[in-house]
Length: 94
Image (cartoon, rainbow, N blue to C red):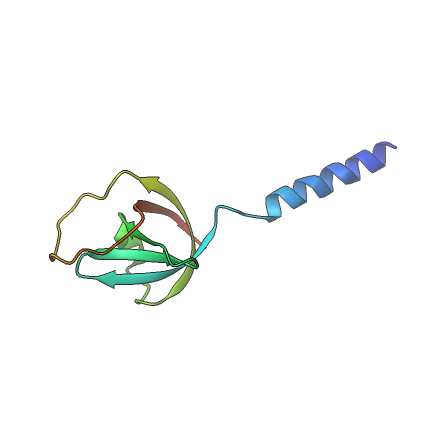
């Protein structure tokens, strides 16, 4: 009985840790207004720490973890308005 409980506990732990719901597959997009990532659902998010994506080309598909931000601070390079769902800070690239 004890080994059964241990087996169930281990399987439950593996099931919970193997499914990383915080990871999002996105496409990198850039224009004169900033750097954005687009989700598979077509939603764009402005990347506040855009330098983290310097090594990725426009259109690259990557997996990221991020935190929502109020807004990004910095210079605006043009008057183009890029419709987006909000600002994010990328915390990890997988």
